Image (cartoon, rainbow, N blue to C red; front, side, top):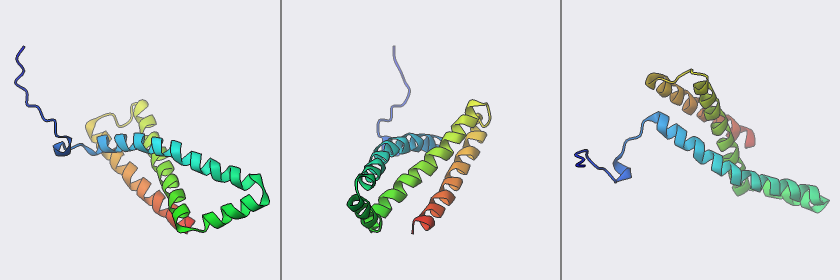
Length: 124
């Protein structure tokens, strides 16, 4: 069978719609959350181990790198939650059209950006 369709194997030249980008990012934030929660659970375990461990965690939490890591985990959580709500609405039949998907994806980006900025202000 002869196929005359064009073949484009260079993924860097493909333009994804916003709905596809937000969906892929939703999956990526899920993986980051899996790793990030391991880090947060380690800090919790260390703080509950002893008084010196608690003091160590307090010192770690005052450092810039740990604050950035915690902000990244919270940012992923905010984005993942908002994108998950969009997916649940789509499961209910809301926003399944192309226009609805574009509007929903735009709202996910806007609400996530606002939530992430608020979380950053809260952490610092």
